[in-house]
Amino acid sequence: MKQDMIVVLDLGSEENPRIAREIRALGVYSEIHPHDITLEQLKALPNVKGIILNGGPNRVVDGVEIDVSQEIYDCDIPALLVDHRGDDPWPADDAQQEAALKNFIFTICGAEANWNMDNFIADQVELIRRQVGDRKVLLALSGGVDSSVVAALLIKAIGKQLTCVHVNHGLLRKGEPEQVVKVFRDEMDANLVYVDAVDRFLDKLAGVDDPEQKRKIIGGEFIRVFEEEARKLDGIEFLGQGTIYPDIIESGTKTVKAVKSHHNVGGLPEDLNFELVEPLKMLFKDEVRSCGKALGLPDSMVYRQPFPGPGLGVRCLGAITRDRLEAVRESDAILREEFAKNGLEGKVWQYFTAIPDLKSVGVRDNRRVDEWCVIIRAVNTVDAMTATVENVPFELLQHITQRITGEVKGVNRVLFDLTPKPTGTIEWE
Image 1 (cartoon, rainbow, N blue to C red):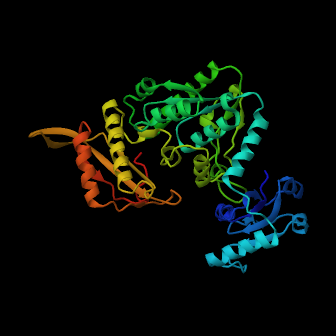
Image 2 (image 1 turned 135 degrees about the vertical axis):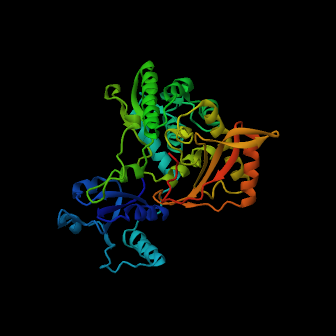
Image 3 (image 1 turned 90 degrees about the horizontal axis):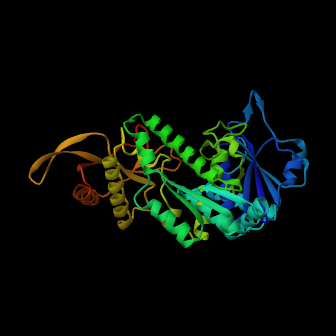
């Protein structure tokens, strides 16, 4: 990398990602590394201008207070101790913290503010070309933010050496498979294999009402479909993957318990024998979106809402039926359209509809009908651990209700979920 770097060494703080993000927000590249990094490993990193020793509540491991090696303390790289245990004079005020950080980075370390998306993309294009050479890469392209940005970056770096496989399992939102084909095959001239596996997935899911079982079927079947497509292609040696920095951080360090395991896409079998290409693995989510914008992807992809891997399969509550799944898809499209029209698209973190396997009596065309109810969920969160409910204007909810009950077949009621997390969760299944 051409950019200057500030290294954050983990001495038990849970604030590591926040500090790394603040440094990057100042225009300087940063990475988090474990406390027991050796001086040789540290000096092997490119353009290290300074070290932040970030202490915190998890500094004692197995009864011993961890620290960096004495040779790192003694080396000629400037170091700043940030101790969140309260016994260090690190300022508590945000403005003072920013001033102290700026003074350390720019005055003491002499770092340059040369971290930006254009430089990042240029560096990654060079690194991808060096890694791949004239060989071929395969990518599972879901249409989600991470896989779409990886695809765009790989297309820029190696063009037709990339093959994207988009599996339509029938559980995507309205218009998403068509958008993937339009953007990547038609506009970006990518090698795109489109797999219509709708019947295959929905047949496997027929009659299955347990949420975890549904997830296992969807995940397992995706692996099988992708593996089948991979075996049809000759000369593939690399697998592109949308790993991002939080995936690596959340896998845990010596002082932070793992939030989730970092794993290869879908747990593909080892006998496929691919080498990984992970060009986004050092980016935070907001930086991934900035990268996508810089690469020319449409806002509808770059700012796509968080969407569960099983897709609408976990919003068609209970056993999935094709007619109820279609009602979820259509009602969700209406909700998204109305939120966009009314300025809520970028304001609300996540919003969707869900339909339980439950019918209630209603009136349509002057006769009694038994039809489904649509549940609207609209929540805001910072870390997805807790969530608050968006205060959607009542008049807008009335309008959405009129549209859904008037336009979506088989629906006679619309409900609004007022439950925060906890006690509710963000999704219903």
